[in-house]
Length: 172
Image 1 (cartoon, one colour):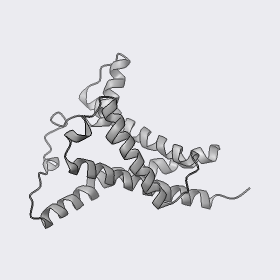
Image 2 (image 1 turned 60 degrees about the vertical axis):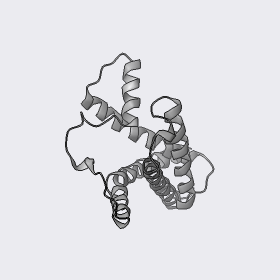
Image 3 (image 1 turned 90 degrees about the horizontal axis):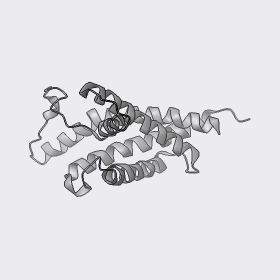
Image 4 (image 1 turned 30 degrees about the horizontal axis):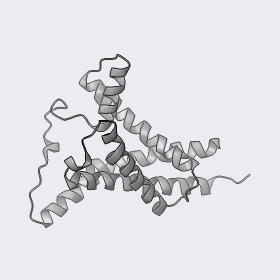
């Protein structure tokens, strides 16, 4: 049981790291390429380093901000960003351990389904239900597609990592 949890935590960390990399480079690059193929211009304000003050809080930052408020702690914008990043990593790592504990097969394909369920349950429903995000219909399709793509990357890496870790361990 502890090995399963440990494998899940390790796989969750790796999958979260790959998801982060895909969200900051691969997904925007593919989105830009698709837009250019369609002859559309993209608004790439992310290259404008106007500082974090002009950026709206991400969902993990809103969670961190809300938790700090509940504890009576005031956080600066920089601290909110730091704790938001920690919330994101803890959440991704946590779902790795959950995957490892349930009886799902360990494979990239099953991981894709797991990632899709996390996207639907968390990004689309839970964040809205908790008042952290707006109603899903308030966001353009591209926001949903990008978030789904990131979660599919997360899930496939998670399934692959768990398959590899569990097959590599010595059998007792």
